[in-house]
Image (cartoon, rainbow, N blue to C red):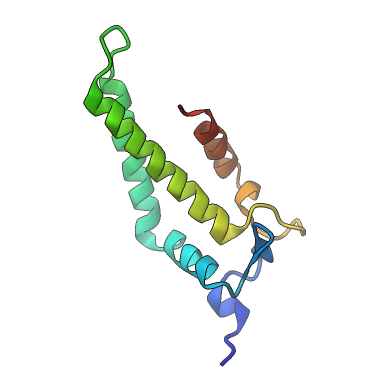
Length: 119
């Protein structure tokens, strides 16, 4: 049974993700479904706020707090996971200007740069 591509994934996405996952790939479909779920952005926003609170609690003049350091590692893992599943769902680059991909959104470009700079 063949399902029309537009019903599964936005037809304006990059044709492949990482040059191997097509629109019909179950992994890409799952990532797209997950990233377009209404709770996804709310969860990411909650993580950003929680991470900001933890960063505000850290005092650079005091010895490192083990709990805050552990939480920072957890946030790094979660933000990296979010970035990777969005890259899989959207694809990294698009061949046509109208196609949407991970790096066509300036917010994603900024997030990927900040993730690359984390310890």
